[in-house]
Length: 117
Image 1 (cartoon, one colour):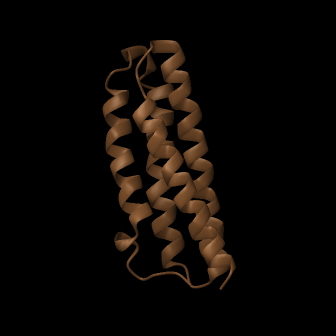
Image 2 (cartoon, helix red, strand yellow):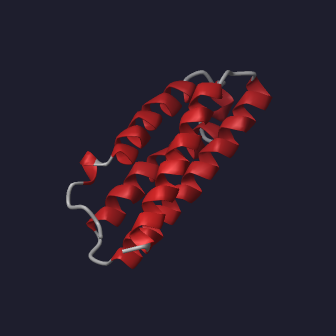
């Protein structure tokens, strides 16, 4: 069952912090990445807490689970793009990748919990 106040979910709070961290990383990218990698990273990272919130406001747990899966997909997208950032520009993104892994595990646990209800 969804919670009415998604802002109390630890996974939502952490994903909001991840947005701030990823935006800071995009400021380190060259200007030529403004409409490419930087833009893609921003859209993907914003999608994580947005889909958690939307899923929690849906009436049925099937919908909530679906939005959790979408958020999980966005985490994988962000991880991949951060690895590209590291490889292309040698920016240390290790701590942010670790946070992505934690958020991914939390979303997986949330989804399993919703499925078991």
